[in-house]
Image (cartoon, rainbow, N blue to C red; front, side):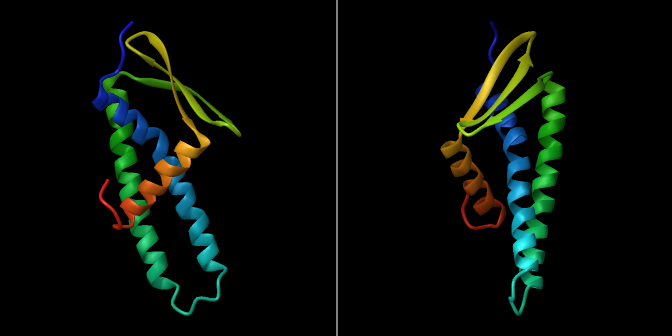
Length: 119
């Protein structure tokens, strides 16, 4: 059985996590929109700039997934976490995050895309 390299696993990780980060930012935009903040526009601009960066990185990850020949064919969410099934070099594999780890990783990426912390 052949396994993805560490670099390929990082691409899978990015491809699977970035949609969660976009969802967080979309929810945050709605909260800001519904808030009584006096100056909402700078927050909208900051988050929209972050989302554009995420979308660019997601497109690159998607291209890399396709180039490498990885096919992610199933995502299963539960109260315990999220699991993805994928095919790599003809073999079926699983990739999963517990709810706690997923939350930690998404938080780290949110901070990164807002320019708060290096990845």
